[in-house]
Image 1 (cartoon, protein in one colour):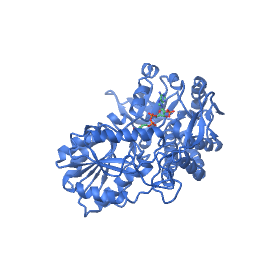
Image 2 (cartoon, protein in one colour; image 1 turned 180 degrees about the horizontal axis):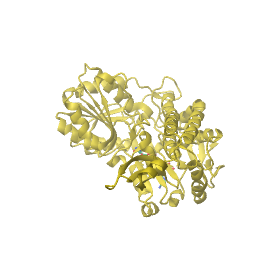
Image 3 (cartoon, protein in one colour; image 1 turned 90 degrees about the horizontal axis):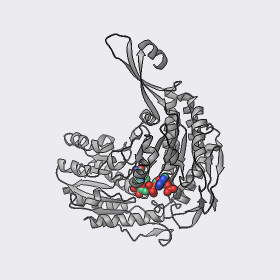
Image 4 (cartoon, helix red, strand yellow; image 1 turned 90 degrees about the vertical axis):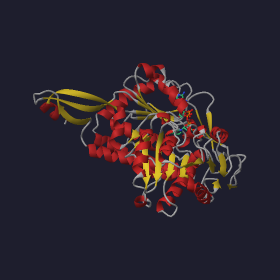
Amino acid sequence: MITLKSYLRGEWVVGQGEPVTLVNPTTGEPVAETSTRGIDFGPVVAHARDVGGPALRALSFAERGKILKALSKAIHASRDELIEASILNAGTTRSDAKFDVDGASGTLAYYASLGKKLGDARHLAEDSEQLTQGARFHGRHIWVPLQGVAVHVNAFNFPAWGIAEKAAVALLAGVPVITKPATSTALLSFRMMEKLVESGALPPGALQLVAGSAGNLLEHLGPQDALAFTGSADTGRKLRGLDNVLSSSTRVNVEADSLNAAVLCADPSDDTYQMFLRDVAKEVTQKTGQKCTATRRVFVHASLIDRVQADLAERLDQITVGDPSLSEVRMGPLANAQQLADYRAGVAKLEASGARVVYGSATEVSLVGADAQKGYFVSPLVLRADAPAEAAAVHAHEVFGPCTTLMPWDDADELVSLVARGGGGLVASVYGDDRDLLPKLVLGIAPYHGRVLLGTKKVADQAISPGLVLPSCVHGGPGRAGGGEELGGERGLRFYMQRCAVQGDRALLDKFFG
Ligand code: NAP
């Protein structure tokens, strides 16, 4: 049994009392344990603010970028070991594990390059503007790092990438991080943190790991701190409503549930149609559908829905489910027993709302090399709701697993309003080449999304699937998705920085801040 440790104030620490057990979702067997009980996080927050913050702020963007590059290399150098930890405790296939681990090193590398590009500066500056009739008096908005700590609370589904994507941005902005992975899959996070510490690249206090429950950590957040959360909408609501967070206006970014939509407007003879099928099949099954960006709702022109159902079934027939360590297995189990229970309850909710299962089963699955009684396995599942406007739960309840619902559409305005019923999502994808319809659809659904992928003939063999979050584009969405925004290149840094309008002599503003 592995005992996970938290990395706090420069030391590896184990909590007291009864630990929480982490299991292998393929077998249900215990693989690790962890506890943060009894740890007072006050001194941990102080260490970040008093030691990590000054150390990072003393560095330029380029110097911070060099740190990120070293961290990226440390993860890449331990890739195989980290992949094994993911298979063991998160039930991922090798390919799904790479998605997480390479996503972590890739995002750090991206922000390392951005740091190099931003160079010797320690703040960001916007263009200056003349404020009065006289030519000298100007205003220039500058961005400076917050003086506090960034606390990151992550979901179970990306134990590596989730930590790295948030930390890369905060560290480059000059703000120290305390990161907390979800307990159930924290083995990979712990192993990754070991590698980051061993790299020797981290300034003291710059990055601390809480391997388990947050204890009293969030009680210490104040006005110069930032809290970035990924997980369920319920927890998000709780955290942003904490008394100290509200009273000190602590910055909060929430990435929560999302009923991501795919819309098909292409003809089956088009390459775009194949792209659509490829993407939907991938988004349903990659990481066993446990991705915040996975496609949950699929809108297909009514004339094509039977065809799509059959073609999608053919693709999903290729997905072997079972022990994710086997090379022939394409989809592993759900991450834990709670997720399995939530998944089944969620599918029942969709069915009660008028959707019927047209592919797979929520209760039965045939497995390769695994025991369905021990692991948390499910099959890929496709539901169909022929009266989408009436299927309320399909637009309101995110089933976090390998499941999607097919729905017909007839009219573009109706389609836009159906997509919008998701109440705000991370990403939508639109497949087709109709030059009149595409801009109408994109402009119609854009207000409800952080990102829209346009799948057209010219990019059919080049575009990545919509579930892949790239550091150069923003990740987040309005409403149900949490109202947050992360990444997006330089845009992401601003969450960790204060914008201040400096007014004065143009020459001085240019000299000091230009
Ligand atoms: P969760 O239960 O909300 O947990 C997310 C994180 O919050 C975990 O690190 C958890 O810690 C922590 N947490 C829970 N209660 C807390 C509290 N009172 N104070 C401080 N931290 C607290 O979500 P999850 O189990 O990871 O995922 C469940 C659902 O989240 C999914 O079904 C899905 O709907 C949604 N999700 C959304 C995204 C996205 O990016 N939009 C990604 C993943 C999941 P412990 O693990 O220690 O309890």
